[in-house]
Length: 154
Image (cartoon, rainbow, N blue to C red; front, side, top):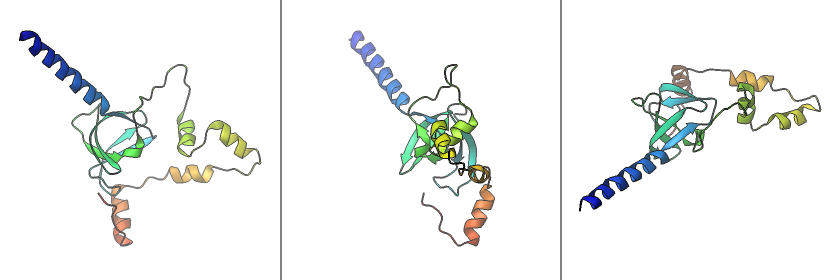
């Protein structure tokens, strides 16, 4: 009887550990706003960075409710497409920098970009300039109100 009891406890612990491990994700974009609600126009609670580990509590459509492992009391919504199941590790054998991550976000690798630059017409300065723009939540909400735009669905 005691043996079955301990086996049940061990099995429960293993199932709980497997379930918890299945809810771990990693931020796969350079910077990601953790939103108060499942909406791009919602207030930003915290900004997460590439490789940050999060725990997924709920998935609703294209959105995931997550908590950063570094701040478990903080919860917010992120686009599910910005999450990776694979742990992002930068080690000594891997050399990458912010510009390479930016290129990957544009769908380019260094090799592909060099092919486009061969003709001398490729210029990513404008793309980099647009990516550098930062719009506050208040400015975004005002833009939506002024333009009488429909808020994105939650």
